Amino acid sequence: MIPLDIAVLRRRLAVTPVTLSHLVAELPDEAFVFREAPGCWTLTEILCHLNEGERENWIPRVRVILSDAPERRFTPFDREAGAKRYAGWTVPALLDEFARLRRESLDALDALDVRPEQLSRTAQHPQLGIVTLEQLLSTWVTHDHGHLAQIARVLTRWSGQRVGPWREFFSLLRSDTAEAR
Image (cartoon, rainbow, N blue to C red; front, side, top):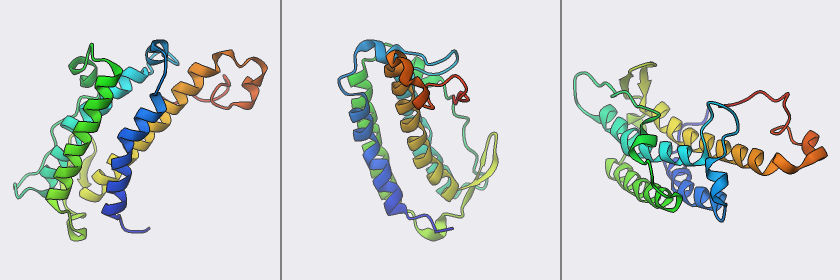
């Protein structure tokens, strides 16, 4: 496996706000409240979650791992808290907030000046046990990519409601496709 390249990771993280904006640009309000299946998040809920993660998850945990504390433990992250914190926010406001928070996160990451030898540092995750900085940073960019894919899937299912017989050509629209939440 190729070692984690922090510069590449940083570039991937930097493009997420723009990618999000392009994915949801010019959509009608109904697209943001569309729920592809019970228990799945809407586009608005995904944006709230991304904001909350940016505020409470990634950089705070990087700082825990890099700290000199004798016991390095992560605070549990509430995946649903963003829906409460950002309730009532408009989509443009959510996108602007995410872009602002991501800029702050990247500035903080730059200031921490993570070096390759620090990637093996560890902390205690409340559910997963011992995790490394490399795993955390890799999870951060994977989390972005996963939610971008989720948004694309939701949009495919929202716009695909009216495709009629072409449904058979879209695996994301067929009922025999396993639901990914």
